[in-house]
Image (tube, rainbow, N blue to C red; front, side, top):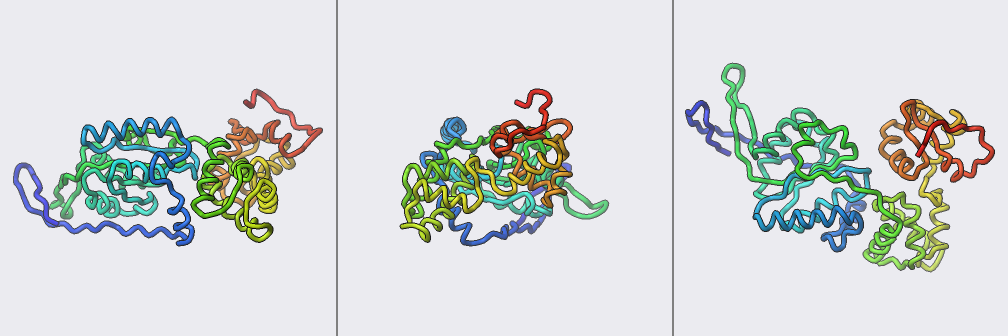
Length: 357
């Protein structure tokens, strides 16, 4: 494409050729079909995050009346709570297209430049795991988010010239599980920042029933609550468990998910009444048996369990902390009295120092 540049008031035509990268995430097609089939398309079908939905409805309505794009949004919180789905709902409500990518896929400057130049006015760019954006791509985003310009250079050595290229106004929606890992300048450029909360059992029960209905799976109220109770407050996990329990019901019963069928299936999957799986229980038991309840460093725990540190921090810890089973202290991780009670450990010699709650 050709653009006109202003180099010290001497206008010059410059030809540039930048292609938008094809983002092809390596995911299982059947999983993607399942995910896409159950994703809500409107706020009415999006369950949970009530306060956030009300705020977004007002913001979207105001943007429509002004005939302007939304402010840039940042959603953060544990994985599986619906950040990507919410971005799709916002695009639907705004009546615009959405382009979805992830920060690790934007390895080179031309990747992010190509995507930005391909955007149409008002469109939404969704970047997942935005805290993993490399420094160069992040700095390219600064003028694009703030002034809707791309700062580029052409030529080499002493012939380098700066090009300031206007781009259509767009909305960037960033999603991250680690808001603290974002740099200050990037975080400050988001006009709307929200944290997504874990779901309640009642909300997850609605999610389970909705998913079962979409998949034509028969389920009763108690069966839905049984699955919701063990879903760790996370819709993604609830949706996955619906499929697994449905398989169990089809083979072991008449295909209908009841409370007893759900409990039997989840017991077979070694998911307990608090939603803990084998890895979670192994982590808690390791702290109790080998480190007298803690505190103990996360690196030590990862090495002892044969797990990656990031797996423990991003997958296991958020829910264990939320459920009051684990405590982070300046000296490391420490179990709580509730963890002992949940695991059925009595007459323990573990002493708890300080206020854990």
